[in-house]
Structure formats: structure tokens, C-alpha cells
Image 1 (cartoon, rainbow, N blue to C red):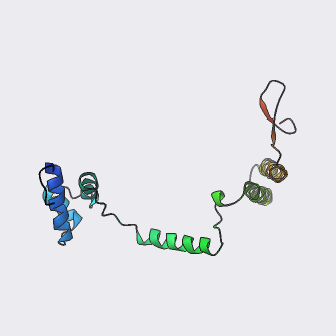
Image 2 (image 1 turned 120 degrees about the horizontal axis):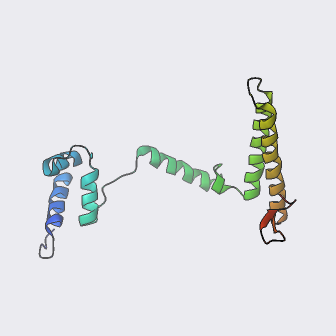
Length: 158
């Protein structure tokens, strides 16, 4: 920083520490020498530089960089990862119905389960409800309607 007329003491310190960092000193060494702090592992000096100089020395992890590159390749090739936000509502409802039905059958076939019948009934109810909601979604119908008192009810009176 050449012009020191409008520079605060903290900005001068930040510039000095940044010059030492560029010369090869580690962030942890800078924190220990300046603040006697050996616990922040470079985070304190990084925050200080961002605040005082507007310089961000953070870099993404190797894993995050690789994941982002793979996601980019998938999207460029027209492949959408199987996540909730990437699929249509009715597709999600069909998946949920299928998973609920499979879970219900697994629970019913488990001889050690104590609530076999009840678990089966609940799981299949969720499966059928999800399927009916998916059908209504595809048809463009709202599964809710207003009752006589103005409250919102599912079709079928539930």
C-alpha cells in the first residue's frame, strides 16, 4: 500500500501481514506471532484480510472442486442428478409412493416387528395418497378445496 494518508492502523497491519504471507510465511505462523493465537488455523488472519483489505485467500477444498466439475459435466450432457429440486413434483410423488409401498411390505414381512399390520397400513396409506396427489398434479387439479367453513380440505373430505 503506497498511499498511507487515509489508511487505518488495522489496514497497515493487514497489509504488512499479507506481504509476509506472500513471502512464504504461513497463516498460522502469522496468527501466532501477531495475536498469540494457535487455535484458528489461519481463519482469523483470513477474516482480518477480508475485513481490512478486501482480499480473500480462501480456496475451495479439492473434494468440492471435483464435485462441482462432475456436476457441470452431468448438466452439460443432459443428466440431472436425482435430487428433490431437480425433478418434477409428480415424479417426486411417484417415487415417494413407491418407497412407502416397499417400506410397508418390508415392515409387514419382518417377523421381529411388533407393529407389522399397523406399519403396513400407514405405509400403504402414504403410498396411495402420494399416487393420488401425483395423478392430480398431472391433471393440473388442486388436491385441496375449501370446505363450508372456508377451511382447506383434501379432496375426498379428508
